[in-house]
Amino acid sequence: MASSRTGSRLLQLAAFGVLTLGVVVCLLTCAVAAALPSKSLESILRVTAPGVVALIAGVGLAAALFGIGSLLSRDTGVAPEVSESLEELNGTVAELRRRLEQSAAPGAAAVPQTDPAALNRMIELLQDLRDVSLMSDEDRRQRLSEQRRRQESEAAESFEQLRGRVEDLMSMSRWDQAHQLAESFAAGHAGDRDAQALLARVVREHDNLRDNSAQRMYEEVKREVEHRHWRAAMAAAQRLFERFPGHPRAEKIRRQFKLIQDNAEIEERQEQEQQIQDLIRNKRLPEAIALAEDLLKRFPLSPQAEAVEEMLPRLRDLAAGAELEGADVK
Image: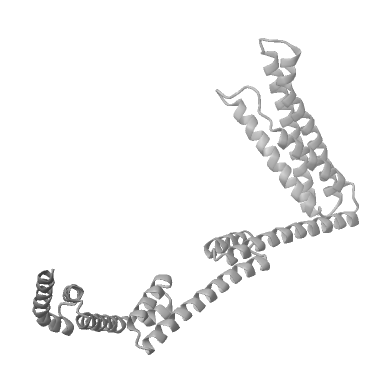
């Protein structure tokens, strides 16, 4: 009961302050109008209109606050929606008071700049307060219940739209954007289980996709190793490192990569040596010499390089002799 009386007194004091604010704004605009060099009716109305509107709004708001204060002095509580409306009204009045103080500062514009949207909102809130103050307790509870259902419906619709956008991004593999959108919504709705579940779903499905993809690439490397296709295994391992550098599957292959790389080099040298022999057998000596020189340059310390180095002088002599024979025939 004591808290109700205190709230009633505070509301009555607030009503007096609001009424005073409206009167001061009106008086200021009237003073500015009196100081105008031009006394035309149009200029006077243009200057005094904000003050008149502020006065009317102040009187209406003061009346509503006095009414709510009277209700509090008789009742033990106030409806939650009344408290919300009062909080918003207090914020609007504070903004108007701030603008008034700015206009009264030295060098500021003489006429207070009253925001029409703020005044319209004040009128709407006054009407809400009037309606609620005239309701019975049962009507207030029903109104509050309807308001909550409407808010829940709007929140559910907003969440469904967000989930559709997130799912679209996931289907296009734009995981970073999907995660950012879901995380932002969940941060703004900390108590919303659906929002938290959506964020967890994005993280889970992205992790599953990464794990499945890394597993497929890991199995490809293993398959090539088992068939001793070392160069194919090395290429598959490098793709795995590029796409999933920190994944456990990539780390496991990285520990074996030196062996794969060495065997891939041996495989390539052996294949190149076989190509040189095939070219010699088909008497394509210039091509055989070029390929032998490339092998020496790329793998100078290999066993194949040693054999090719011994063979190259003889290949060059044969190639030179073949050129001479061709020249004689011509």
